[in-house]
Amino acid sequence: MAEYLIFFNQQWVGDHPEEWYATRVKPSMAVMAEMKEAGVYVYAGGLEEGDQGPISSADDTSGELVISDGPYVETTEFLGGLTIIDVPDDEQARYWCGRVAQGCGWPQEVRKFKPRPPG
Image 1 (tube, rainbow, N blue to C red):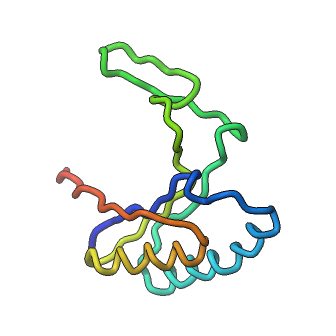
Image 2 (image 1 turned 45 degrees about the vertical axis):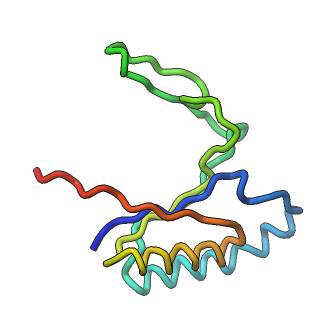
């Protein structure tokens, strides 16, 4: 088994009326329940948008820790939410990525976590 990250950037969601978002709750929760039943679910959650909560970054690359308000790099896109799954192969990861995209109603991307070093 390997862990995969399924995620979306907030900008991929698109502009929709509030009523539209309410229609996505039931299908997205159904996908999470399906993942749990299949035994692949590790975690899932959406993130608060930048103006709804604190966002900070930390950088120790100079040898001195600097903690700043805002993102590490100014960018036009930011992470909107994520799902972590534990599945046997890339094919299953792509399947669940597609199911999450169907449930949410916007694009998703899937990437495999590097193996953890022993110890």
